[in-house]
Image 1 (cartoon, one colour):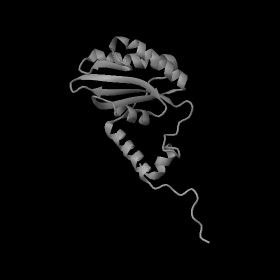
Image 2 (tube, rainbow, N blue to C red):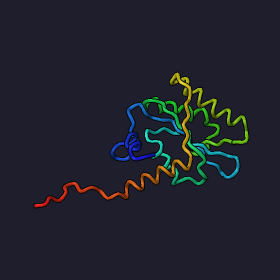
Image 3 (cartoon, helix red, strand yellow):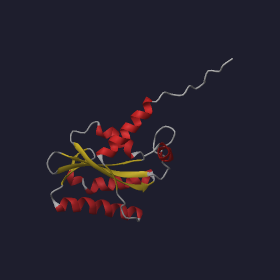
Image 4 (cartoon, rainbow, N blue to C red):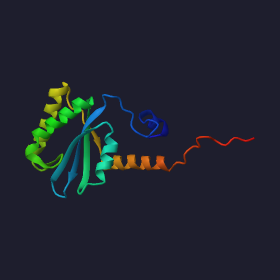
Length: 160
């Protein structure tokens, strides 16, 4: 991504530009080394920043993140609560749920439940976007390089 493209999607503070209706539902998949996935279901208007903060405390390897635009914060929160209720039998701790990726029923249950709840509340089908660990690392590197740039003087020196 070149510098011009970066400023097309980021504001002056380095955050992705979002409008009031840009809340997203995200599902962070972590693998325990076997076929068991722990999935965190949450909402955020700044998905990359949210995943970056979550990644620092993960005990398992981050596999991928799926996210989709929902709309306003209230609607996104409502959908998140419905998904948590639907998966309460899979809850491990907090907003984390356990799925076996070798089990076709587990995969079908996850996608079926999430798609059904989103379609019921928004009238739209799910359009998943993916964040890989490599994409997240590139985002973090971009944020770090932006912080290392020398700041422009607020009041530049004037010659007499």
